[in-house]
Every structure is written in C-alpha cells, then in structure tokens.
Length: 178
Image 1 (cartoon, rainbow, N blue to C red):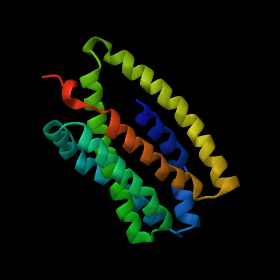
Image 2: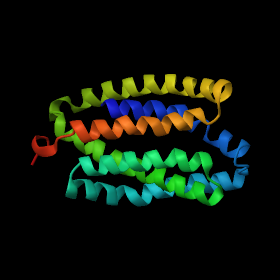
Image 3: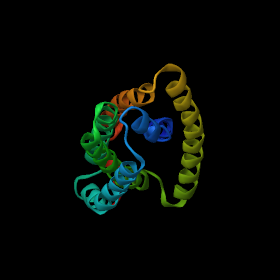
Image 4: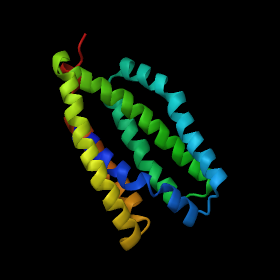
C-alpha cells in the first residue's frame, strides 16, 4: 500500500508536466509527442498479458521489483534524453506500469479476503486520489518555482525506498492463495 501511495503521488507530480518539459526542454513538437504517447500506450497494451502471465508464473515480488527498476530508469532517461531516448524512456514507463498493475493487483487479491476486496480497493483508491491531487499541486510548484527537473528527479528518488520496501516487506511464502 505504501509503495502504491508513493507511486500515485509521484505519477501525479510528473505526468501533467511531461508535455511541458518535452516541449520546452527537448523541443518535441505536437506530432512527435502524440507518437510518444501512442508508443507509451502501445507498450502497456502489448505487455499487459505477458506481465500477468509472468506474475502468475514467478510470483508477485520479482515483477514488482522489475517495475520499480524500470520506473527509476524512466525519469532519468526522460530528463536527459533526446527523441530516440524518449522512446526508450516511455517503453520503460509502459513496461513498469504493466508489471506493476499485474503484480500489485494480484498481491492485493492474495492478501485481502474475498469479502473485503471491494472495501479495500475503495479505501485505497480514495487515498490514492487524495495523494494524486496533492502530488499534482506539488509538481506544479516545484516545476515553476524551484526547477523544471525537480519533479522528475524526485520521481527517480522515490523509486529507491519503494524498491527497498518491496525487497524487505513482500514475503510471498504465506500470501498466495491456491
């Protein structure tokens, strides 16, 4: 839950400013931005089913860890990349999203009793949306008044504790239901 909350906050802090940064810093035009967004979406579509199969085959922890590593690479590539590197960045972002969605939702289903899953998801989403609203505001403040790179640098930095939390606290030995 903590890692999902942090990723929701960071997502909101950066996502609205991707296009602004890409246009102002990387000089990406509107059509190339549309192509990048199509590539990002296509990467999630193409990797969704394999990510789910992988999660079922090897467990939840390893895909979650891979997700954090890819998510950590994404803002670094985005901040300092040119157009071809931006395609790699958005592939990392899409792959991270696909892996995270499959493994986190499977882990949630493993941990939460069937009769409480709706309530748990509702509570989780409520908190995520609150954090996202604050994240968007924080991202705008940092982008405009501190540095346009700061929201993206913080995005990278947040992946470090999320990776460590996943490594330390996800124990699949007793969580998976048969």
